[in-house]
Image (cartoon, rainbow, N blue to C red; front, side, top):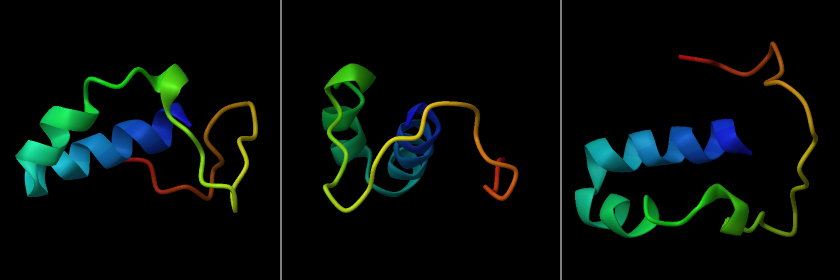
Length: 51
């Protein structure tokens, strides 16, 4: 989840600075996962594109 949140914030910083300003204040522990998905503990999978 930390990887996905950081990835989203990075994209928002480049594309929508106002939205980034709002969301970057939210602690990771308070981010809610969309009900269709679930968090899997552990490192980022190899198949993920890590930049």
